[in-house]
Length: 143
Image (cartoon, rainbow, N blue to C red; front, side, top):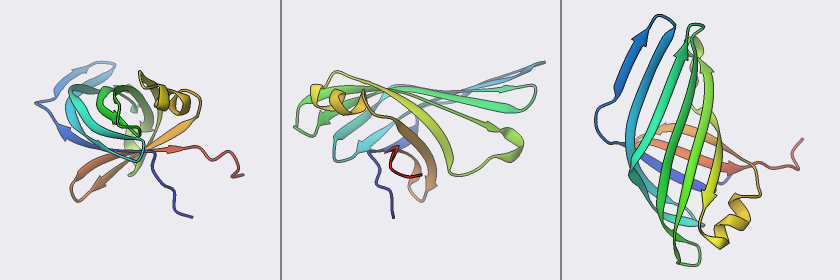
């Protein structure tokens, strides 16, 4: 059965990344913007998004992307959705797609009833038109 994304976020670079290498690891901060298309929300990723990646001495990478979506909910009302999206993987065994765990905050009453009460997973996929972050609702009936 094909899973259907709750949100499809297309990521675009927004300036140069900043990198720091130290004796106990490295930090990479990648600014981005983008667009969002889904049944529940349409809009943009504000150009202040940043993906902070910290790699420790054991080569474990923690990715934490934080960004604000601005657009309209399924009722056509103007709203925002804040996303904090976290993922971890061993730098020596990167996988694509990569998997994440998002947290959402929104000022849309319609979206809040859904995004604040359910659990979601994310998946980063490199496609022909660029990087997409897909969020899916966890199906609690699978097992």
